[in-house]
Length: 155
Image (tube, rainbow, N blue to C red):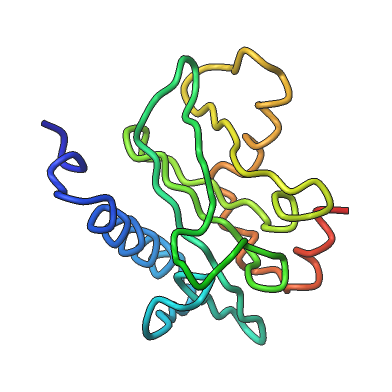
C-alpha cells in the first residue's frame, strides 16, 4: 500500500496535500498563511513582498491512461463555484509522480470555465490540447506575481 493510500478519507489526504504544499512553498522562502476555518474558497495564502495570493490546493493520485484527471469543483455547501474573485492560483499535486502544477486560476475560471483538466507528467497526452498545462509544472515563480498579473492569464 502506498503512503497516500493509508489515509482513511479524502479529507485527511487533502489536509496532508495542503501541508505538503505549505512545506514546499516555505522551502522556496514564501511566507505561508493558513486561514482559520473552512469557509474560504482558498486553502492557503502566500505572501511575497507586497503580494498576497489565494491558493486552492488539490491532490490527485488516480492515473487515467497517459495522465491524471483533476476535477476541481468546491466541496463545501456554502461555496457554489470557484470564481476568479476568490482564487489566484490552483496548486495541484500529482502524488504518485511527486509533481506540482501551479496554474493561474484565471485560466480555469475565466470566460470558458473548466470543471476538469488532464495533467500528463509521465508521457505526452493523447490529446495535444491536454498538454497545454505542462508549462505550469513546478512553476513556483508564479507565486511571485501579483493578482492583477495572474488575472491576465485567462484573457
